[in-house]
Length: 623
Image (spheres, rainbow, N blue to C red):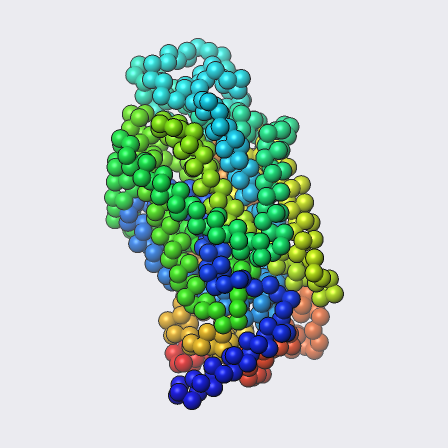
């Protein structure tokens, strides 16, 4: 590009920016570029980084797992992140509105809306649990450290109690016990040392009994709902209220909140890491975490789990990246954002692993157990293992509050993103006459009211079973399907050459060949293969020793498919709305409509009727 062309391009952009702001004032924008970056970072860095990544990393070769995970971060996460951010920023629309570029695929947006209505209530419940733990931390003695409470059983073992005599003849109602295992079960029939006794009271440490019988009030299974737990009902109500107050004014209020919720966890995690490293056994945990087992890389399951972790650590496919990026200024550098946020998110996962394993190493040292027998995943690490570890520290109440503040902030940022995606979908669906000054407040109030009602299920005695079921199935199929279709539709229906022109109009840079090859060929093929392998190797969920019934498993698969079904249904409806032969209808339904062409005209992009498949293939290797 010559100097004159560059000058002309800059001039046209300045003119466009003025016109853009005059014509699209109804869409709120981030106050500055940094707000968007930290909002995306806060969304990407969630509890999956803190709870899931360290466990998956350790299970799949420790430090060796970082190799496939880093590879898939670069070749899958960054292209998908960039693609979704580009669609949102270019159209300034939510997850449904962006598919004006291919009306046939509006079902993707409806699928994202359904995912949001499933994810927001169950994921936000962890916020309520954390609130209750913070409340309980302000007691003179942490309630999960002793066995003289009303919820404890006769087989309870207090934290740090290595001399308690276990009465194996005590008659206990075993239906009350859900043995969420974070120790490896051992044969304790003839052992007399504490290790064997601890295994014998498997699932009955004071920490776990507090979690199971006090916090959850757990029932015998998913078919035994029981009653609503009053303390969880109150915490759930506070959770929904706090989320509503954070999003009531849209990004104007959210942009200020994320400064704290996205950045403060790094400070708190650093403090927790320093404190954990000062305790005996912490280095054993860290070495267990980072010591690589390269032999594990020969197993395909390791590579499959690495690509799955990308969706949990970075978060493409949920519609949130599109929704957040739709509030960007027209020429924000989305390429920079995609690379920066993705890599920071992955580094945070690695950093969180040091925090978790340093703490688990200390706990293993105190219990006289190997590290491998203490580490666990999911809520177990947050509400059983870590609370027990901090209870052994001096000033345990302080460390408990700090840890659960991290849980709150890392969880709430992800929820902000999912809620914003849902609100973006609803806004896209509503006719323009409803886009009033107070639309955001009304939508937020209605959405959070629905979320509150749906979330009441998780406050019952069977709530944790429902939580585990949804967590197991909600992303089983949908994320692979959405990610694959995004790449195919943009690259081969809309046309990668047309998309490249749009991107250049936004950021002034052309798409590199490597991005085109990755995003439009390699990623969809890889995700399709990974989806079939995942489904083929899928196992029914369990919660500790509890096995879900066939009916519950069927419901789980219905949840998994609920966000995928709207896609073919929308295809059929859209084709029926078009005119002409079947071929003409399909072609018309896959052609960008006039609304999308208006977006392109705002950027000064010249309109071309269509791009052939041959042109797309040639464009793969040419600029």
